[in-house]
Length: 67
Image (cartoon, rainbow, N blue to C red; front, side):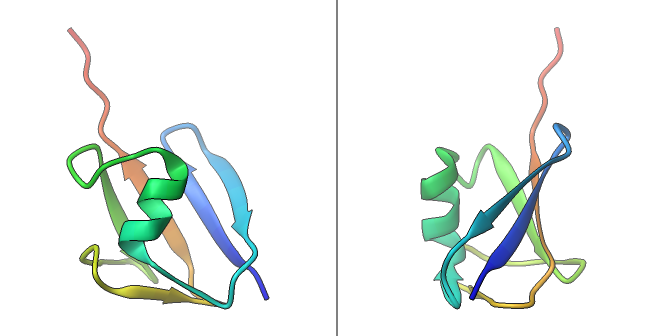
C-alpha cells in the first residue's frame, strides 16, 4: 500500500510505503515543520494529528519566502 504525496511549489511527487500515516509524521519524514508547510488531503487543509490513508490525494504546500 502506498500514499502518494505531491510537494509544491517544486511539483515533486514521492510515495510513502504505508497504508496510513499521521500528518505530523509525514512532515517529519519530509524534513518540514507545520510552520513551513500546509497539508491538504483530498483538497482540504488537515491538522497535523489527522491521518492520511492509502488512496488519499495528499499535497504539501511549502511556504516560499522571497526577499
